Image 1 (cartoon, rainbow, N blue to C red):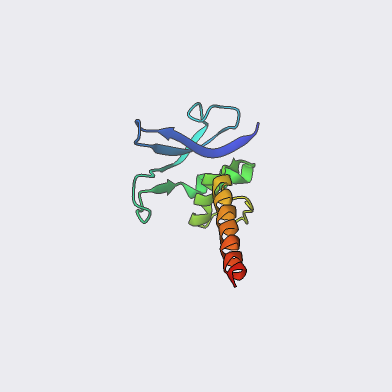
Image 2: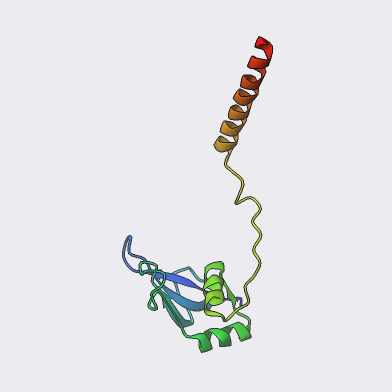
Length: 122
């Protein structure tokens, strides 16, 4: 059975609240879980102690059993010092979108035309 440590959403519309849970990876996001490991409230300020609460001992036990944390939970564990910081590689994130690239090409073309025009006038 593939185990995941992930977030299960609770709370009402536009007021998210998450439980950090250990669950079977085949179960739905908000469905059945095996154990509650903590909570995450994204509405609180980032420096608040109540924003992320985790039972580190339980999480470590699940990690030792082979459970894999999701990306967001892994970042929380890195911030808490439970896991080593993983290197991430997303080379496409920094590249501009298609419209921005088109605008940059048009701007470069206009600049090239402007540079040629005074040279022709002399």
